[in-house]
Amino acid sequence: MRRIAISVAASTLTLSLAGCSMLSATEDGADASPTKGNDITVGVLMPEETNTRYEQFDYPIIKKKVAALTGNQGKTVYANAAAKAKTQETQMQKMIDDKVDVILLDAVDAHSIADMVKTAKDAGIPVIAYDRLAEGPIDGYVSFDNELVGEVQGRSLIEALGTADTSDKVVMVNGSPTDPNAGQFKQGSLSELNGKVTIAESFDTTDWSPKIAESNMTKAINKIGKGNIAAVLSANDAMAGGVIKAFEAAGVNELPPITGQDAELSAVQRIVSGEQYMSVYKSYPREAEAAAEMAVAKIQGKAIQFDALTRKKVDSPTDKDVPAQLVPVVALTKSNINATVIADGIYKVSDICTSKYKTACASIGLK
Ligand code: BGC
View 1 (cartoon, rainbow, N blue to C red):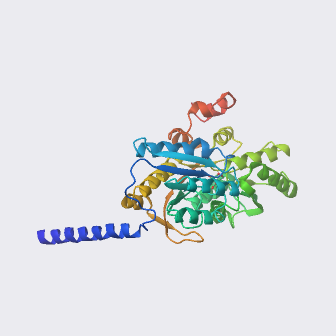
View 2 (spheres, rainbow, N blue to C red; view 1 turned 30 degrees about the vertical axis):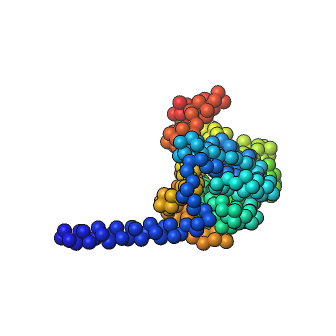
View 3 (cartoon, rainbow, N blue to C red; view 1 turned 120 degrees about the vertical axis):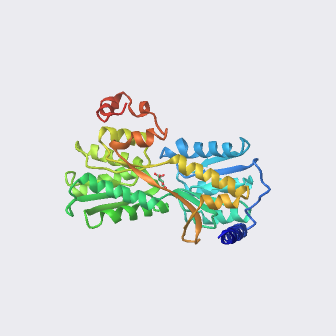
């Protein structure tokens, strides 16, 4: 028995050693520089500013985590492209010229940025795609489970309708066509809506712009009739804000169920007051901290740690089997504000329950 146990232990050891050498063999030398210590620079490129998440949560959390992982020696440099793909290319070129050690890239246009990803790679700078799956030779990807985001939105919308009927007319306000997440959100929600309701109108929204969402919604209201829209599947909170404005401008007082995503403060307040049915809460700390960990592990040549952080594999249109981490998400409705954004320290009750929302907050026990 003992001999068997020992030989099993020995073979496990051989296996895990083989595993180690395989792990380092997958490092391609250009980007694995085990000599790098804590004095490192992480370049962070975010796509836009209309949505509050990037500057309020993603970047500050990444910055703090990089500092924590490097005994306060590691630096982050930051640029936001304000939804302009060309601006992002220039920002990324500058980071390459400045010789940052690694780049976390949330692409404005996941396709057109591919050449710049290649330029970084050729310069020995690994690129980790953040939130949106950039094309080109990226070294890793961290995001939420984006198809699940859409499923959660679709399922919540059906739940809000109670007895969904194929005669129920739903308007879909989708995200930007240059963002691969938008396609996944749409696919996820359609998998829940198809066959249960009628998709009366469906728009893709340039730059995820709330203003464009508002004008598309106005078109839909004029076409379908303001009393004939059963629900609106809005892909995110900022656009849900635009959708609500369009309904208000059309004189609609009783809003249909409207979805969102991101748990923006204004959206959480609209959920409290009943103007918006739900949002999708995506834990920013989990995504942003994982990104910081991946970036630091990558530059410091900690292949085993990097692999442990990226147990999934995803395919982009240009690259197969990209090591990835996909963080799960939850629906955020009136009933779980406490258990999500409050519990995670994203907002305090006092942030949400300002004087305008005091009564509504009290009615759902938020105090
Ligand atoms: C993100 C969403 C965000 C949207 C607009 C998507 O890629 O996953 O959280 O609302 O972009 O910025």
